[in-house]
Structure formats: structure tokens, C-alpha cells
Figure 1 (cartoon, rainbow, N blue to C red):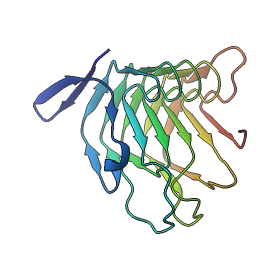
Figure 2: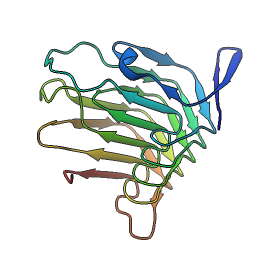
Figure 3: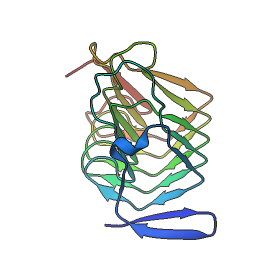
Figure 4: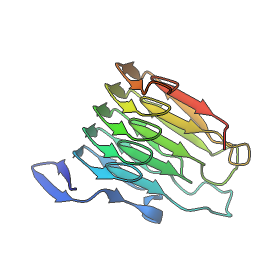
Length: 178
């Protein structure tokens, strides 16, 4: 399946955006991600890869974006995050779905395990009508004692998010299970 990435006066039709290690210090601004389909992150897959460095070296900023009707056959209907600590602000997440965890966003592990810089920030975002079959209708965060990631969530709106019959956390699910 294809994604439709739209920015200022142009659209690109392509597969899900897999940024890998290129995400350090990157800004993604004002793009619509719609109708994406992938195993991990229907629209975007952020995975910097495990690092031995405990020094902060920049995290991706995602702002003023719309994530609509994306689907993951794995985790993270819109965004899958691993080994990085993004700052997501002023974005809208509508109607994203996951066959597993995190209807809109799923996070596994953070950057380095350094407790001072492993913050995922979500600010002034709207999460509406996202669905996960298992846990975290809008957001799934796996806290692993060795990775130590934390979510700083401020002024977000969560409405109409849900999980499957046996799922937990219609809006947000934080777990230390592994």
C-alpha cells in the first residue's frame, strides 16, 4: 500500500516513511500522512538503533502534521518508535488502527538508557478515534527498566480512542511487561 505525504502545495505517493538512523536532529513539519499500511508504524517508523552513547545527540521533532487513517499490521497505527525520544507537538491523529498495540503511536525502548535524556514529549496533540486490537487505543508505551524511557504529555486531547474486547488503556497504556 502507499502513503500520501502532503506538504506545502505538493504530495508524494510512496510507501511508509522509514527514517532509521537519519532521524537524529530531524524536523518533520506540516505534512499529512494518510492511508499508510505497514507492519510497524503505518505512516512512520522511527528507529535509531541501539546506541552505546549516553550523550544527547538530538531527537526528531514532528510538528504540525496530520496522521489520518493509517494502519499497522503490527504495532503503532501511525508511528512506531524504537531507540529514540521524539518530540511530537501540534499534530492530529485521526482514525489510525493497529492489529496489535498503539492505535496511533507505539513506543518500545528509548535511546540509550540514560535517564536524563530518554523523554518522549507529546504536546498539544489531538488523538481521536484511534483503535488498537490489544493495548493503548491512542498511545502504547513500553517502559523497560534498562531503557528507562518516560513520556511527558501536556495539553493533549484524547477522545473516542478504543481497544479490542480484551485490550487495556483506551487512550494510553504504559507497561513494564516484556
